[in-house]
Image (cartoon, rainbow over all chains, first blue to last red; front, side, top):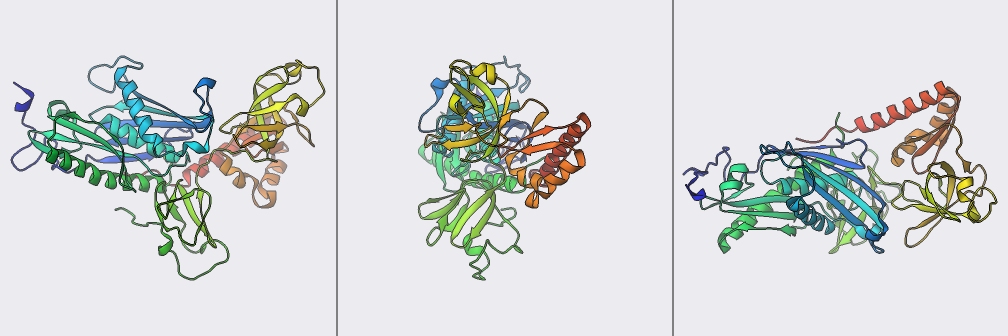
Length: 239
Length: 236
């Protein structure tokens, strides 16, 4: 049986987990979960769970990584060995290196790095439970944790992935849809300005489908951006 | 969306009270980074605010303050940023023949040149005066454009810390510790019979008998926990 034969959306447009095409999985945000860090955030998004800790700005070591005109963002994305049903070998691998890099690039577009020349901001993203779209959850949680650490930013970055399953474009793919779907389009959006900070695409989408996925992502990002802002304003500490 | 209390200058009270910050009766306007604060025309930009495409934008999470024509944000969390004249407690991280490198809790380390050190010494004798890992009470002498700072130990009361303990608190909680005109800090010193020196970088030097020091540390931790609990947890 080919992947395309797996039925993931019924004739009424209801997906395997009961959502409609444009629905996002439930999200919760908690701040200050790592008391020793300068800023931290735990975000659950569907079954995904991520903890992000931010340290700094601090002196950058070794000296060769220092930039004379701005701070450097040291982002490390890591999946815990127990985060998926197949055990993940601990440590850096090709995938986590790539995600660390794209996350760092996306965050660099909002953090006012030029205010802290020669220093370093460390962002540690730890995936506790993975269901699909962990790079999106990691990036969103990282921007909230940076804001919690009091690091000046021009905007938050909210990341959502839309994709195509059984020929239908849907928002925020879950694990089955991610594994057996036809395409995946994760996007990082600045919710206040509507600008784009990051985009990746896996699989094929026609021009119309791409536009539809784009619109879903943009809409969802604005809603999730409001959640993040609300979480930041409501204080930040777990009672 | 939820809450819907968007902080915009146009939403603020129209009483035209030009003196002082915005009405204290009004609930504080909380903002998150990136939030639009209104048109930038006729307003001066203060801490935590930038102008983008003619609009004011918050760059930090905190309370928006409007003081006359100037708009700023009182951040709810900040890293210590050195300013000349600040009394700080530094930890010596390294040294060369004539310079100590001091961690003052800022985004960059400070240097303490031998000429500004606590005593006269031979070239190469830095380590015999202050060794790596030791704490010093010093003052920020200057902060350069590239943000490297110089500290000095020449001045009244500046010394190497030889006894007691150094405790860390968040720099924004210092006001709470010191109180109005130093009342709370004075009370703390009287109650515990300890010497308590609160440095601007959030490090507190506590010196006295064991019970007294323990009491001060307990109170500091309780204060930090209280400040953290004062704001409700995240949102679901």
